[in-house]
Length: 81
Image (cartoon, rainbow, N blue to C red; front, side, top):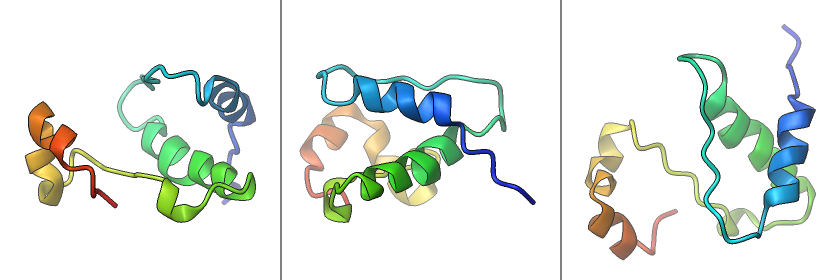
């Protein structure tokens, strides 16, 4: 199966990177939002020279990350990998 690279979305995210604002990715269920961020954009960042340990990927729908659904816990969790 051929991977859809979503280069327009990657380019948009890259242009907005580092502006101090939170980016919110929206879309209907199962349209590829998580794949865009956790796979495509992460790959792009690594190709641009960003170190892997400088990328935080946190899936808030995973049971093991449930404590971070609380904003205070998320703020205190500065050691998230």
